[in-house]
Length: 353
Image 1 (cartoon, one colour):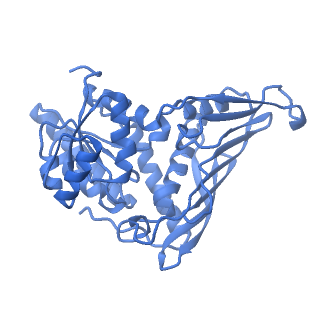
Image 2: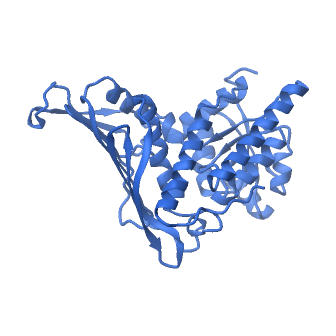
Image 3: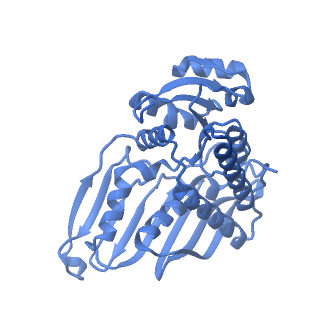
């Protein structure tokens, strides 16, 4: 096998997000939409027919036991991510799992320990083992790489402030994103993107991300669930503002870095295929904002999900078990728990023993 050979992909869950992350992306990458499993086999059959999958499996367990599959995509509700990631790894599968990878940090650590154990056992037996990747697709798009490049090359001067927003209109009350038992909430669904992106920028600047304060607006029918969170962090000495809201009248997935000689602004860093602009101000070397020039760089409308699947295929084919993303995922989960604790909210319950 080479890194360009298509993957045979199985879906664990006939989910809406899988249409973007796998179905549409695989049409671009040429990877094979092999099988779907859902709680109801009839739903899986209808989903497979609608989205061009070759077949179904009658249960989640049957899907992950299928040795013909190269990759399992887990698009289940948050509270099921870690449990089924571990089951798939124990079956020798590689897994692309939706964010967040676990419901809380202790569950993440149990999942990571099981992953390490599976790798060690496979090495001892001389067999191949699977790996797990968390689906932070935004990081694979050139827009994020270019934003970091502009920040690092000094074009906007010394970084003075960072602002990130993750807001969207509210899903219906029946949506699992509102379920405490399924690890729902605004930070779990939206804020995880913001925190992960801040960590990515922090790595580039060699600046640790630390939480300073956080306040939550609670969901009307369950006071354990956050509908919105405003948090303050620092990246080294740089102040950071984060606003996430799952009941906003508007969509806003923006990321801005302000410097002493300019700024860089991404109107939609999570889905740049919908708005691929990077708006850069500065470039004149002046600290006077009135002297700054503005330009717009277009980073391309290829989907971030397509870039993600291309990277995952290479990693699967090469047997790549790099821990860089996994370590960032752990730091993301740790900060999510810190935000909840600071807001006086309970951690989301895990299911992995």
